[in-house]
Length: 512
Image (cartoon, rainbow, N blue to C red; front, side):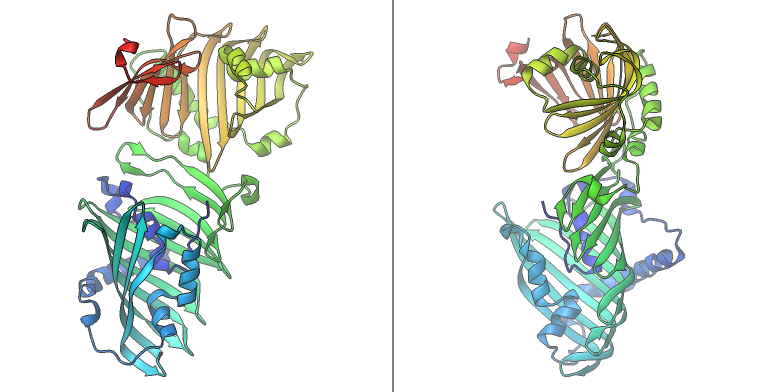
């Protein structure tokens, strides 16, 4: 996957966040705006809101407002309209899938105020324009019509000083349905044609269903070609990313936000280098704590015990435990060379034999940080870091007790799983001789998983919660889904499915 925002003007970048369907929801916070402690940012936001009130009604007039001062050159037409050349625009599309590339169907820019020499503004100017595009994806044609108004200064053919832009962007599908209607205001600073300092964009977006939201985007130009981008959905910080020459380069952080009240998205971070996903070591330490966010997600409320006490204990654990990381594992020194039997027992408990025989684990290693081991076998209380790979590598920070190679007492874990993005999960359970004697509870982002043993050996009843609400319940046998599964939809509907040894069976009677 390549992530690129090459050559996009400051006000355009926010649309990467503004488009998704899930943004068209009803959380009132989506219509709010962030509050900045920085006086300069607060002042820019106030100006953008004033521009929205004053200029937005004029955007409907399109190219009918004013008479052209002069005929602009093709280069200046693109520069004032897009803040890039036609070649740079083509380069920005080159890395997109062919069907998603924008085909420009109309491109016009007219100078309405200011002096003009040889097809270029000289000094202060005002320009209006149109930029219409068409794209195709999975058989669907999308047409976008954009009306713009730009004010600023050109010196020696280059943008200089503050450039303010207002735009209305309307997108329709091929069947005529409205996808979105966005009105955007932006402020940016230029020096000899290059963006500098900080810029801000403010987008008022109306979705196809009439729901509204506000997206705020701030760009900070750190060095030549390197830009730090932050975006807010309503009043909620949504994303942080850094680009180099327009390509994602560094951490891309998606912060938890509540699109629907009570349902928070998960915090994720992904490391990029020149638009490509790479290992986290390339980006170094992240500025935010994924684990800290997990502890703040809404969780189900139980009146019964032991679930109630275990949820409280796991919440405390998620707030205080340090998740295992690959860096921590590589730097750790083991008290002994841990025997394979102990590694399997610590990692999989009652399912160790099944996992081992199934060949499902590519890598299983461990470094004992605290505890006793006899000939490599852990005995008694322990603290260990595990490196586990079952397709996606994980590092697990685990505490518990082993007696004669079996789990006893309370087990606590904090796991970091590495795939395209990093995820953190926490777990708690009580055992006697490898037998689960309490619910086993896991926090994985906004998801809470509650697994309760039944009277049948190896069988567990599972409840999955999304935030505070139950999303699904089913049963597993020796770790494999087996029996009736019920999904609970937000509409109140229930969907039942039948599984036999992990395989879905169409005949529901097979599970009754």
